[in-house]
Length: 348
Image 1 (cartoon, one colour):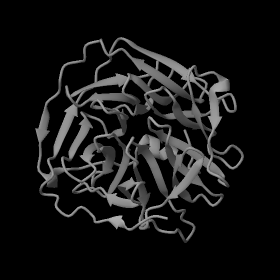
Image 2 (spheres, one colour):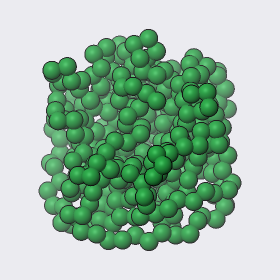
Image 3 (cartoon, rainbow, N blue to C red):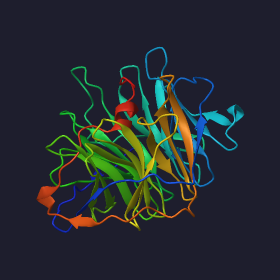
Image 4 (cartoon, rainbow, N blue to C red):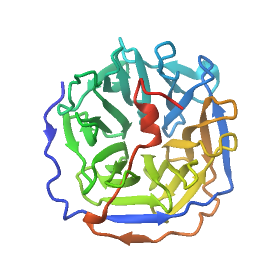
């Protein structure tokens, strides 16, 4: 079904690398709406949103008795507006991303914990597995996931090799080709989203075990890396077509904050649900000011959240980008959504 993966990026010297050491600020004009599927109000994660406001996500903590079950959710976001979406024959499914034509991507798992990427167009599911993905063995599950899709049949994702390192890639559903994405000095790279211009978001691991985010063109040019000042973990989980990225970071006190970053103005904003301060993750963004993610509430449950951002509110002060050499790029240890996204893993 899949074709040979495109050649590994060979020339890193042509990449433009920048790192942002920025400090996000709070911002007014942001509203939060908790959205939980009544099939399991104790664990929901919202992971993607398109311009019509349709949301992708899943419920279920991922245990043998409470497996992940995927869904989409359409406005006006009542219980009747949930539509189940699960890969045929799967034990668990997460619907992670969707585009403006209703095409969805995600991954499913068998009872052995092996993960397989998928694209769904209309009623048809297509399994997507990079040919370099190890087939598993010695009790180690296979991991291959798609995490984002644009309107041009391009999806972003990753596979995990036999040593536990991730390899980010772009999959072209029209041709079946895989293109691996590289970050110099990184030991693990995960691609999380792709917009209509072919700009890819993601994060990577470096020798110090911390996480940094990156933006890179699908053809391997224009690499930029980003890091919240003082954070050990900065991750971009998605992006839109207007120069905005979303994700999360972990501060010096170990608290997790949702993050909105504006590439054009080089500004960042904390997106913290008031019911889950220190536990908010933002996973998806559309072009109309809607963000989705999840937080852990005072009840200990994980709740999906829809965020509306008032674009008329001024942005915080801009941040400078500092150019660095490729050899100075360091990175990530383990990101929040991936920890939750690997089906069968323990969830917080």
